[in-house]
Image (cartoon, rainbow, N blue to C red):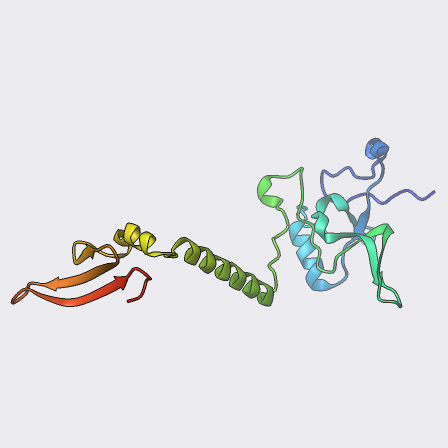
Length: 194
């Protein structure tokens, strides 16, 4: 039986014989892609470390969303099939970010991924439509009595005058600049017609 590879992160005891009673953990090779390799080496808290071909980083240092434990494919009939992997694999751009044995500023959770712009735009439009509907429903004047009882919410009564009669209401604006006059007025009938 082949011994599992040990984690190269300083302070991590994954797959060491003294700590393997809980079982071994999966380890991943340092990437060969230069850009991704540079990101890994920048994140891993080891000063002036040059990894060897046998250097590995264990799954404990990756956010779970970057580790694929299932194989998903579509068969000839178009059905999606899911099978557990024998060995987990890392997602394409995974970078180790979790280092429990180091100061907090050296360890962080994975950044939250944003939804695509089209999806965000659609979500915004749906929220906006819902908010408009709620506003209109809460601000709806359903009948004459509601209008009369809530006119102060809509009319500045220090400027506009409000006269209620049994089957209509008159709202008018008075102007006392030169001589008293009504400069604007609205009559609202009982059937909410102006």
